[in-house]
Image 1 (tube, helix red, strand yellow):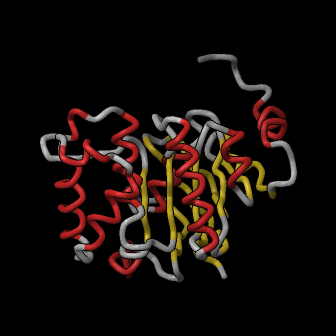
Image 2: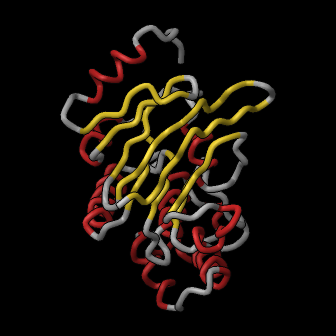
Image 3: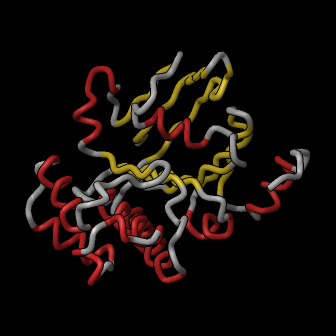
Length: 233
């Protein structure tokens, strides 16, 4: 069963092609690793899949629906963390979660579930402006998992997490996969992706240049695809 289908998706920004004729499908209950250097189009693709930006051509179907017709139906079943997490900085972690809970009309039990999931403990009642990057990422991921989403889109979710946080996240994603959740995750931590993903999608200059299963060394494939890129920080 396909959770998501993209057909001939293209996006231009300032007359520059940032996504070029993307054709992808995502099976239910699988983890997909989205890979590519900075500027390859990973975040743009994820933003398009969340209807955060419009596409110039093509179609994106999620749960056999399109945003222009059934956006509320889709949003209710998707959890997403794209780019840097955003919060109300003068509100506490608890207050930020409570705000989202009420907005999404989720049960009160979600508040305690999210507190335990984030592992923020004493920081739960501190203003988010005092959080470290890792603490903000934990809070963002907790909010992302609220409401038992069936499709997760995670853009560099390990950024800022300590080793314990990365381990906990990986175990949670594996559990979600077992529960039938479809997951798309981008990361520059290739070895961590190797442990998680069933399939890899390689983007280069806005194009899908390779899709493969997790039966090869991901670093070798990465170096083969991008070996001619300029050496830079």
